[in-house]
Image (cartoon, rainbow, N blue to C red; front, side):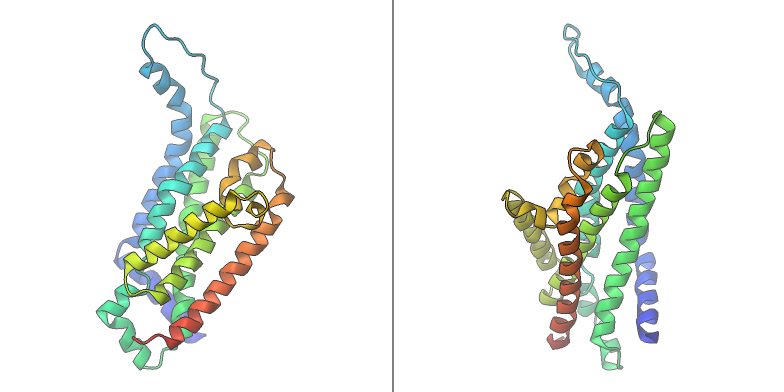
Length: 254
């Protein structure tokens, strides 16, 4: 346990020294602000872009429009930034030889994997919480009646989906020797989940179900209970992938 805590602290400190933590915080903070702001000014932008002879009646922006922008930004730009930031979670240290030195001095490979996942978990959670709190506060400021049903559960679903992807990324890192290989496997999994989602019989059992139903949850067109299978499967798959990462890394030749 002492080695686990020490190595986790080392990982978090390394994220500060390499500016990974700051990049994540800045990106998520910016998109947390931009989401309600874009929702507020989008009708004016569209009106200004229209030719003078064309008049289009646009609905008054509401809080739910801000959250639509939020989930769109997180699932697109912020998700890609997160995956790229963590893509070198093992390969960078192995290429420099720093991790090899620690392992030869008695640090267990299990500790390495668990500490790396813990640091990714903490950084992602802090960054996402910052984006959510920023978006929530600014939405409350810009829009009246900003209370939205199922908001926290919808936030949880998107958070859990990325946790699942981080476990995929970590497992890929134990298999591949380069950042590009990790990215290839992770984005391939995302693509495969997208294909499975198009199956009416399977979609409710896939982690992708958590990522695409954020707005339906807020609009009340999807019941919270309908996501219970996707939540359970995402948690179980994440745990399996972490265990598999430990087992594979134990046998990997450095």
